[in-house]
Image (cartoon, rainbow, N blue to C red; front, side):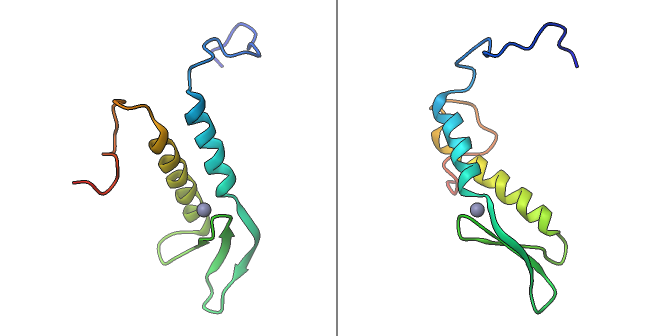
Length: 99
Ligand SMILES: [Zn+2]
């Protein structure tokens, strides 16, 4: 740890992350929690439902955990990208699908 002082309860810069982006991240996490149990399908795959309605599963070259991680990262990205301030430099062109 590089902290040598006490970690303050309040962030030093309260506006470090805009409220909108913070809310978007929380919303994405809430809307994309896995629900129920892992199910093994007849063809031997393992699946689990996401709260958004998508079924996450393993595949020929990826694990169920890979899919869950990617799905959550995509959801977080989409939520944050949608509310990020105008003019912010981006790694990915936004909106998506505009060449
Ligand atoms: Zn989801």
